[in-house]
Length: 184
Image (cartoon, rainbow, N blue to C red; front, side, top):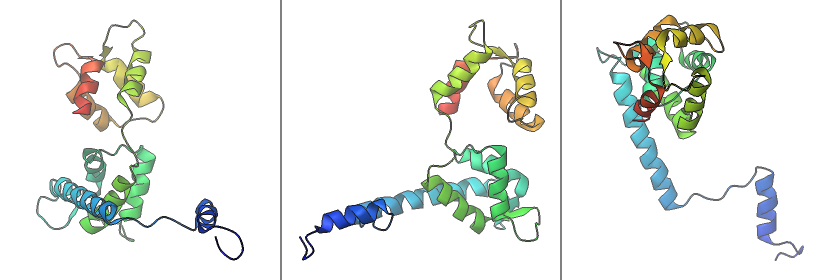
């Protein structure tokens, strides 16, 4: 208790509520955070390198969405455009430098932004389309819905998804199997 009669913990709680005080990070937590940051950095470097075929430290701006999604982030198209705008050069060149991408990707991944929807939410969405509860959706019906309603997907995005999700012989998307594959 201080001379004014208030305890230091009361002051700390009040300052914390005001956003001015944060507890010091312990050595263990700091090491954990550094290890996580390093692991994320290695993953970002590896995924980026897949598209930097000549190892020049940059990739085509059109590949950023693929790299971001390979890292487990699922931003909307608008959020992805904002990310690209943030890391593009002042005079756009059509390429993204690794250093800028790395800083953004690590920051976003550490903050757990743009996470995938949980399995239950994906199942609910597919079941809303599968009104007869057959356990599958026709690929062409899915294509139509994803290009005409809500946040519209590009033809390339739909083709990529359906090449992975749809049975090539029947043209059906067995959505429970597809969602299981997404979780792997």
